[in-house]
Image 1 (cartoon, rainbow, N blue to C red):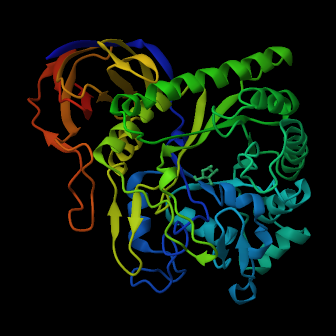
Image 2 (cartoon, protein in one colour):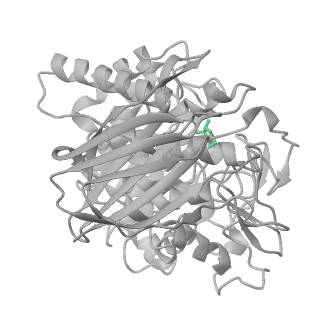
Length: 497
Ligand code: AHR
């Protein structure tokens, strides 16, 4: 058995955690909306056609913010198609996913749905085929109380009160050749800046996210980010980053995704801080990791011009859930700069929640580590000083064999610890030394593990891969010794006594 030690001291707080780092994403993609969250013919649909079984699964996941309506979809989308009487709404070709968009679900339906999901919306505007002016009209429609053309239109449509969306994304992945109306960094930066000005004029309280690079593999990374920041710095509040991982045959590489994401975050922070210095600005640019997940993009099979096609319906394994756990440790450990993050996506399309048309809801393996972290990693995040063996990975070199996350919630006086053990053949005996938190009593320990890393959940075996409770002795103290199973994800919660 390998040995490791983790020291956490209450004096070394990284940041208070902004709950919006536990966000997610609903795009008009595949069956995320139609036959996902919205299926009026379903027995569980409410009077608005929202599936209540899906809403429950979303609420139980504790997702405080949901990005909408894309993604790639937004860059060819006219939001005006999705308002007013449903019978008058046009059917359109969606260029992003080569699908038929019926527009039966639009911005007002989303506003209602997200409220029922106990969440808030993060709205992306179309900066592909769309203009800054149309983005301004959307903000006017959503956020201005009354007395103007678009705000009164909203009232005419049955929404007396404004939706008051707080967070707005200035386009999506505009550096991508796949993006409808993709732009050069210079052209995007100017368009984003002009849109930002309008959105802040319409509603000075909004927070704005500009598009950073869509991935660090782009040839333009990180120059794109620098250019966008140089032009937009005074006008925006966040720069975005997106990151997806998939298993490519090497488990060590895949489980080390948490390490790669950490490097990416540091590069973007450095880029932003360079521009901050150039601008002689006091403002620290925050990061919005508004798309992240495991995504088997190579398995995508797009059949043209279908309505609600089943695309990107990845069935996640135990191994994928371990990767998601590791990525969550990185995200929360960077909570001083990463203020928003969205697990992409939420329902059916690369998602933790899967629905059967006219059938039930299935929680994929990735649902569980996300739920644990979003439910229990609250309050402050603290530096985990970790001593453990490295693992040799072909892709990233030597990487720590464990990824840890330590949080303390002053309100409930609970300490939550999360750890990914990426050692495939070795258990690890971990000494957890918790300093300055007073005496703690272990409340629970939950472990996600199994002999078969490729095991999945299915409608026949929906709980094949879920966290299992381990017996806890109830010991009280400041130092605890825990045995971590090989290739496992563990959550341990303590209460101050
Ligand atoms: O989340 C799926 C897609 O991934 C989004 O539409 C796009 O922004 C990204 O490339």
